[in-house]
Length: 160
Image (cartoon, rainbow, N blue to C red; front, side):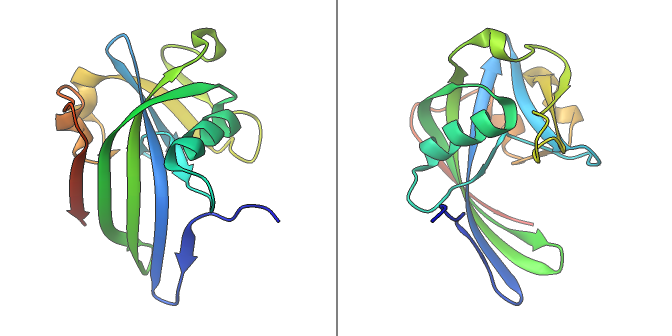
């Protein structure tokens, strides 16, 4: 049986558990967006039943980018309450610092598409962390927290 995502939908609500990677390189951060979207997010995805949030990131980076990463440490936990279409959504997300095991596996600047799979609907872009204010990016606290990472894990509750 294939592992199922921690994504539970009810008539008017969605509950999900995600994991996202904070990948930094020479003052830039890797972001993703849908091909048709203007909003950016950190690469990652839903955690599957039976895997840790770190294992989910390793899997997601391999599936979407074809790269192997190492997970350094958990930096943020977010409980987000927001609208997903007509439904109320409650997302729990773990954000981890990650690094590339082999930096030559992906472009280290500019904009590029994901692997030619069902994930090819994604575009990845390296953005200078000093220019994040110019982008619509989620989580919004990223803009202020990325330049000054705490030594421990920070917890955020966001409501849209």
